Length: 214
Length: 214
DNA sequence: CTGCTGTTGGTACGTTTGTACCATAAACAT
DNA sequence: ATGTTTATGGTACAAACGTACCAACAGCAG
Image (cartoon, rainbow over all chains, first blue to last red; front, side):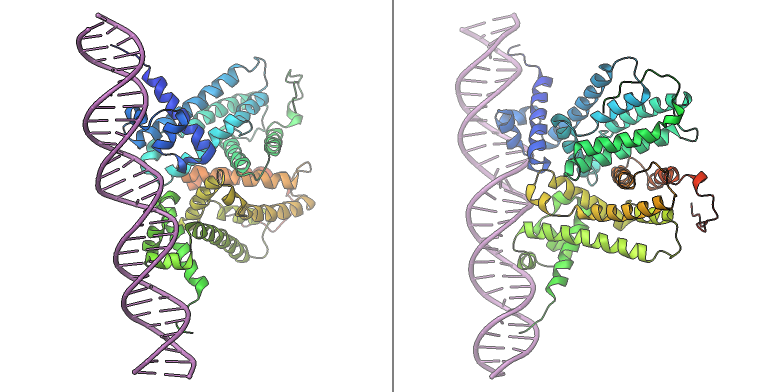
């Protein structure tokens, strides 16, 4: 058996090229030829690894969510152990905001797919919504523990709070992508919301959550 | 001069057909021929009133925002005079949520345009973001008056609250469009937020805002 | 009626799309 | 070397796209 090539890695190169292209020129400008050119390979090779365009699109979407999950995992792993729930949430949501360039690219392409899925049942069946759902799971978990610890308002409902946070985050993300708001303004609004979520008069019991990076 | 036809009305028919088509099959499936078929006219007619496809797309976007503004104006005009600020906000945001079919169509098409605008500078220059901006203006206005009336938390900032409301609303809207959440769940979260915005312990001074439709 | 102008329908051209096919060169295990 | 897999090139084809062009009809002035 000659010329052993990692097919998955090759596919990753191609789907990455697709994402790069989509982030730059929009998902509508993604063609087999354009992807081949972006990846620096021949059109024939793209056809070799993805028999049809739909397969390529689906694979790119899968890789997109996979990369996003990896970024999240890395970010919370890099988080210092003794962190407040609030800091944890902010770190989680900061990744979900299109601040830096890779995050911006991700959100742009993901939104493009989301819009496509609104009218394409086959794409809607693809569980790429799991990205947000995974985030929502972590949010619920964190909020429930915070609620048990008495850091939240007593009448707060953790799962609803998680949904609200997620909605705010997505709304802010698109507003930033559209250019309606700057990244700083989005972060400010997010912090405003977290301020309300964690009222000051409840957390006056010497917590070590002092590290305040504005 | 023979055969006098209202050009604007004709254009409206065509752009409406475009929006209808885009809401059903996605903006990517909008072609000159498809729009002509949807409107029940010939391709030549579409070319006659819109020399190029870009003009047609821009006109449809303009009409979309115009119709949206009209719906808002009508909705708040139909609102009974003695309404609480909270009821006013809920009415305003209910229109901005893809609950009924026309509202769903509007959000779907608007999101499609928004995604396009992220990579198309010419489309981004088009001031179709004014729709949300107009809503934000009304929100700020209402929240400022409510703040002056003492219905809000004293430390609340009306303009930030407006931005937050708008973000929540947009996030909820897309989650409903994606099928991640039902319309009822979205409304519940919205009411949850409004409950927090207008705390009960502040409004216990015999206001006539009793009409509570759940 | 005759003729001009606004309006419509049909048709065609060049380009780009996804997909398909065939031959061939390069790389590596045996 | 032998043979199988990987990769590339070229070419082609039907379909759909935006756009342009040309003939024909409808209504009003003279």
